[in-house]
Amino acid sequence: MIEAGAATPLLEVNSLCKHFPTGKGLFSRNAPVVKAVEDVSFHVGAGEIVGLVGESGSGKTTIGRSVLRLVEPTSGSVRFDGREITTLNESELRGLRKEMQIVFQDPFASLNPRMTVEQILTQALRIHEPKRKDLREVVVSLLERVGLSSAHLARYPHEFSGGQRQRIGIARAVSLRPRFLVADEPVSALDVSVQAQVVNLLQDLQREMQLSMLFIAHDLSVVEYISDRVIVLYLGRIMEVARGRDLYVNPRHPYTEALLSAVPVPDPTVKRNLVLLEGDIPSPLNPPSGCVFRTRCPAATELCAHEVPPLVEIAPAHFKACHHR
Image (tube, rainbow, N blue to C red; front, side, top):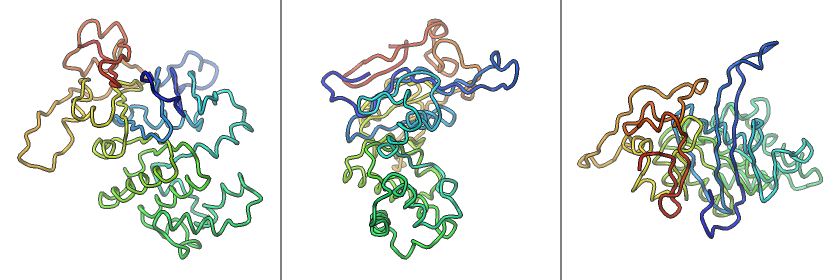
């Protein structure tokens, strides 16, 4: 799913699947599995920000952690800079960690409460660059870049606000100057007044460091603001992919239309055609046959129950997985 004429992607994911077994013991082989991610393919170009959106439980975080091998993929291929990473051993993977980092959703749980800010930010540097002598200078520079100062070095995570803790998490993620960053809902746990500041910080760092980024969120307005392209996910499968503005102006999949219709508009005079989806998202333990969205889709047909729709290009750089044309 790479557009014709596009440059070689920095990250290329093909047919990624992640299943979580639900049983243990003697008969675990026959136990049902949670199909969190099913046959997902996408790419992230050098210096590109790709947004990944969908309802809670759609598999967004699992994809982000799978491409970093924080969880092991069940099957599929993940290539970083042309190198297959799903087959790397622990030693080889450790060397790659410097180039692929993550900003976690919960800024409190992701920071060790027993470590000071200085210890948190120097930990990765001590592992990957053990001979470096200017650690304190590097850490102070990182803190200043994310809006903090050297006065915060001796403090512990509980002494900071949520927005400040997330800034520390971002500083830790970029301390090794990675080439690829997974931002896993980095603003969802923050106050609305702080969210824009953190998004702008990520955007500035991306430009300065020429980062490629997978930006995971459920807030469509945030994703539109920061992303070059957007992937819409539902129950572990990709429904639609398009350039950010194209997706918001002209959504082509019924699920995308429903998501966008629910986004609040600041102008009270603008009338929105609200698309209401019936029922809840099905369980990944027993997903619907064929198109996983068909049980809630207003345009579903008999074909949708029997065949999984392929992700096809319906316009330049615009892809959709839907039988309904």
